[in-house]
Length: 471
Image (cartoon, rainbow, N blue to C red):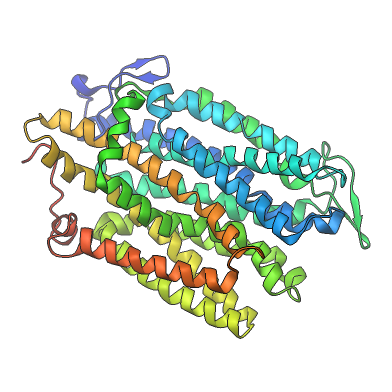
């Protein structure tokens, strides 16, 4: 039986881990793995709830006119887009918060903050005279859920060793992303019946609708997992750092390149998920009532493909996987354009399912690239530093870049519905723009990272996962 190495034992000061070295095999097997997994499995449902609240608009907005609200199509698209705009902006700030406040405290606070939009939306939709500006404010507050992703991914990145980091981040993000499909699956069902704290119904045709339930049903779960975060999660002392120390990532070219690529994967996933219900209702109104209960399938595929394929990028390389993901996305977008043009719902729906699945795989593969890129970069940037210093710097920069890229990509939630809206460029033109964007992602992935001479070519093709201790 292995005994813990006292030099790397996870000494604790309350809920703070004062020593944390997951790359040490003895430490990891004896202590670290159990602690890391506990934090991961509390983080996942907390993040899922954040996505639920962020995406609750995708269920409530298409129903507003049917329960008496006199909003235009352009106003409805703006409500969806505003949640994305605020979520992306908040992620920029959230991405730097874990090293400042600690993962335990920050996760607890941001989970509790979800109560504000959940309760606000739940009560605003019950009164058809509620002015539009109130809904606009609530859409911005729903962005509190969107901001959580950046801090959650940054936090989990500190807990796992390099060999398992890609899979851990894929599980956290993938199951967290399930919140998108969960709210689109549960929402249409819970609005059909009363809940104890749900208020009164609105008669739509011959059916009573409790639209507020789509938001209020999540209130007790938010409280439960905020408590779980407070009592079950940990801070890591070595992860603490100031904003000024983290801001070095703004000088790293790979930070900006990965923002571009992650916009292509996660930005597409979250934007398509946000806009898909309202886009489908707009393009195919004749089938909307029938297919509304199954719109969750697209985001579900994206979330599951992300959580299920993290191991693939760990095994063969994130850049290689990302390259082929963008190729598939280009082909899927071409198919969507064709089937919109011929007004074929079946072809449109299947093409979007492929697109969702591809974005999920790409979400995992692009995030897997970041720590490997930074391990190579710190060797170049800090040639005289010790292995320990390089390791710590690579971990901190990787975590900050992971959070920041997720922040920029979250603007896809705003940009895609904004492009679809009647006052925008329209669905067909938007899809052509997205296709052109994916072409640039293919070029960047190949030229900078995966080709012979690229940053990750030797690491991925020949298995040369250099350590930060080598020159």
